[in-house]
Image 1 (cartoon, rainbow, N blue to C red):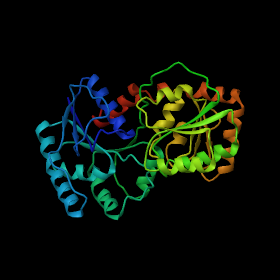
Image 2: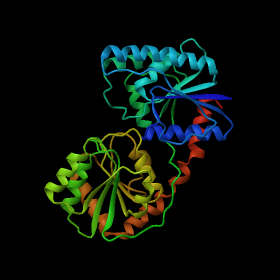
Image 3: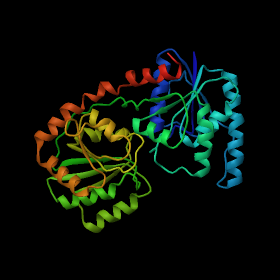
Image 4: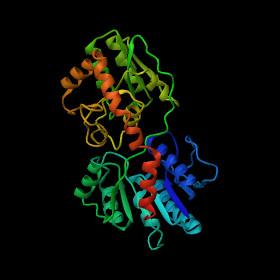
Amino acid sequence: MKIMFIIPTLKQGGMERVVSELANYANTKGYDVSIIFLEKNSLFYHLDERINTYFPSFGYQKTFISKLIFKIKLLFYIRKIVLKVQPISVFSLPHKYNSLSVLALFKTKVPIYVSDRSNPKNNIGFFQELFRKLMYPYANGIIAQTRFAELTMIQKGIRNDNYKVIPNPVKVLKFHNTISLSPKVVLNIGRLTSGKNQKHLIEIFNEINDNTWQLIIVGSGPLQQELQSYINEIGANNVKLAGSSNDVDKWLAIAEIFAFTSISEGFPNALLEAMCYPVACISYDCDAGPRDIIKNGENGILIPIDNRQKYKEILKEMMQREDLRNSLKAESYKLREQYSIDKIGMKFLNFITKK
């Protein structure tokens, strides 16, 4: 049986990582898997050599007309390949291209399922929103990462009779020998963007002012220079920007606490990976994601998103109490099975193939 994914690229990112794992998993289950890429790109994530890949021979310039022509070409490109391959099901993501994918397969009788991967409350623009409302009812199903995402989309008037909540699987973790460092490590992993809110974490950590701990932030992004300048300005010698890493598990192995300050999420892969490793986790309760993973006080700590003082108090308490950290880890590692690729992958395949 043939199934197909549609995604812009397989560059480094949470959505891309999930697609690579779902595609490889489907391949191991005997499906003939194909991926249509919507942009020319190199593959950051590994794909089984048996997976068929398709890349467009055209691109676009950063002008309105060029982008419009590019999207028109994509319509015919997607339709041509799908009709050639004749899969039993197509899965498209993210929202930026989903409506286009649904339109491309209109009247082909090939089932198509879509999924949005960012915070469902994000403003995606008037025309994107209108296009989504027009096209999503024609999709055979919509996968939401969280119950909150499903409800928010319904409240926005995105109609479809077949919603399904399926979270991301946790990636296969590489377990390194745990190393106890001095000073101990508070860890944050994520792109250096305003939504990930790392400057806020640096401020809080610096105010706690405990030299027996260090804060390490793993990731790169547009705010890297600004954050480094701020660290230098306040003289936070125990805060380190470690840059991006192809092996974040080695950082999880040395961390005592994972501190998540994101204010906007679709589904927080980095938080889930830290909890499954396990590392004791604290997170703001942003709109989507953390509350689906964390049972507050049992396997992690959730802080109201507008309560900066509470976050600082609880983070300080976690730094001081090894017993608290150990009790959180003892519960959070149980998430490994719940979010394993075997469980999530099978839910996904059953949904898009109607099993």
